Image 1 (tube, rainbow, N blue to C red):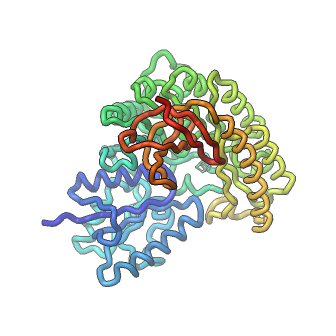
Image 2 (tube, rainbow, N blue to C red):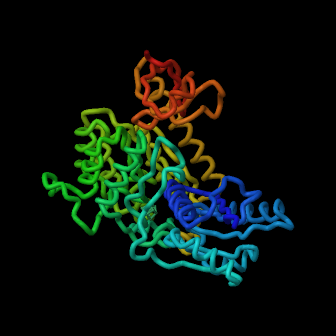
Image 3 (tube, rainbow, N blue to C red):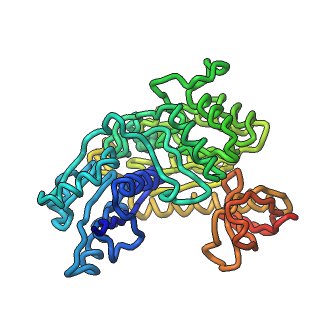
Length: 445
Ligand code: SF4
């Protein structure tokens, strides 16, 4: 009997990529074919993101496209991930072509929902919690990269920032058992992975139920102890993202300083440089708290690269409050910023605030901040010229057929002339050219 083929299209963040990898592993283990082609697959699933309104609109656009493309031979279509969790059965009304809706904790049960439909049910819905015995178990075939593995360590979020939907779509924080994480890292190392990224909405809020089992660091925060335990596996490179400022303590920096394989890059979203706005966002820290974290990072023995997220035009953000954000950016000298214009997410506390910042003002602020950051980045990146860096070669450059691309330990993109046998290797490059978002280098013999 021919196997049922499944195609999963992923929108959004690393957590969604990791969930897709997990779902695909489960499908394959349950006798399904996982394919890369939405035009022939028997089942098409959309793994959705709801952090921004645009990602949600994209879902309905894609459903329409698949229907047109596959007219007369429509696949069984389903929605999984954050939009599924939040909208639930309402998706069936918005898009009658959808027959399956699976929430963020139903990843391991997708095949059962498909079986129910095959057995005659018109529609299947599962918004339930993870069940006993369901563990992260991703096969190497399903990983998005053969060299860089995502390892989720915490799901959900307890912070309830007023603009954010994540605590509703992904539920409360649930930390994964340290033993399970360490075993996965050992497995990835034995499979030849060169880098892992510990991922979660707030990795440094990690609080497992069971002990991490590193006696000598009993007083340190669980996350810094986990970092030390993961570093002790000997995995060549370890990165982690995203960190929450309030839970970022100096022992994380101490661990990075201590272990060479803990990479020198921290992503620490600040969101605003003004205390009133931070309070309205309910971020739980002040600008001075954030700056003290930055000071501890900048005082590290090795130079740690620093990136952040900033929201422009939060409801009622005044222009002088935005100026505070500009000042903070000037002061912190970030290596990179993800700038987002505030977009309302329904049912969040911020959606009840009057959005007094016009679209024109948001755009002007966005451009001003972007310009400032480009100047900072230009200077920062040009400081690399003439320096030698170690780069994990991850693939071919998207812009040139003769170039390869990879990341430094500080998470900068570097392109260079090279051939396919270097893929998956860590090479030494001398930087010859700096752009605003990437570097160009030459192989050092
Ligand atoms: S910390 Fe705030 S912004 Fe980040 S996921 Fe949690 S609620 Fe959302």
